[in-house]
Length: 408
Image (cartoon, rainbow, N blue to C red):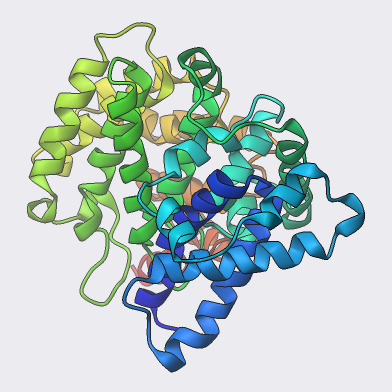
C-alpha cells in the first residue's frame, strides 16, 4: 500500500466516522465499522482502482458493516438500534451525510466530560487523528496494553452517555477545551517528529492538526490559548523543509538552512502569538509559541536570544508540570549560564519516573557534555539515546553524532 493511499484513508476515516455517528449514533459501533470499511478499501482499491468519489463509497460499506455489527449483538440491541436498522442504505442516505466535515464535532464529542482527560485525549487521537494505539501510547508515555484498555473503556463510556452528535454549547466547549487542545498538540507533534519508524515527518498528521486548529480558532477567535496553539504549530511547521537533508537525515535546528524556512507561516504565527500574548492569563501554548517565535525570528542560530527564551521557559514551568518543558529549559540554561548548571538540572529531571527511561534525557545529556568538552561521556550518552529511540532518523542522527565525536 503506497503512502499516498494511506494518507487518503487517514484523511477520510474521521469524515466517514462523523457521517455515521451523525446519521445513526452508536459511536463505538461506528468506529469499529469504519475500521472494517478501511480494511475492505485497502484490499479492493489497489486491485480495482480508487473510486472517483471515495468518501460515499466508504460510507456505504461502513454503514453495511455497522448494521452487521448491530445484528450480531441482538441481545443488547435497544429501540434506538432497531430504528437505525430501519434506515435504508442507498444513494439518498449517503448524500445526506457527506456534505459536511464533522471532524470538529467529533473532536468535542470525544472530549466528553464523563471521560478522564487522559481518556479524552486517547480516544480523540484514535478517532479523529487516526493514530494507532502504539503511537498514542508513545505520545502519552504509557504502555501499549494500558492504552488499548483506556481507548476501549472510553468508547464504552461515550456509548453509555447518549451524548447527541452536535457541537456542544459555548459553556460545554469551554469545559472540554483543555483536552481538545492537548489532542491537537499531540497529533501535530506525532506528525512533525514521528516517534517510530523510518519516516522523520508525517505531514498528513501535522497538516490535519493545523487544519483542525484553524477550524477551532475560527469558532473561538478570542481564546488566547487556541490562537497560541495555532501560532505554535505554524511557527514549528515553518521549519519543516529544513529538518532533513537531501538524504533524509535529520538536521538539528541550529544547523538548519534558514532560507528554507517558510516566511509566510512565520509571519502568520508571529502575528497570532503577538495578539495572543495580550490576552490573560497566559497559558502554555501561548508561551511555547512565544519561544518558537524567538527562534524563528533569529537570522542565524548565533543570534538566538537565549536570555529571552530562558525567561519564557521559567514562565512556562509555572503553567505546566511537564518534565519535557524542564528538559528544554535545561538547554536554555546551558546557552545562558553554561553546561554544568544545566547538567545538574538534568540529573534532577531524570528522577521523574515519567521520563526516567526516555531517550531524550540521554540526548540532552550528550549535547550538554559535548558543550562542556567531555566528548567521551557525550559519545556514551549519544549511543544510549540512539538505543532508546524507536525513530530510525533519530537513531541515525544520534549514532552519527557519536561516531563524529569519537573520531575527533
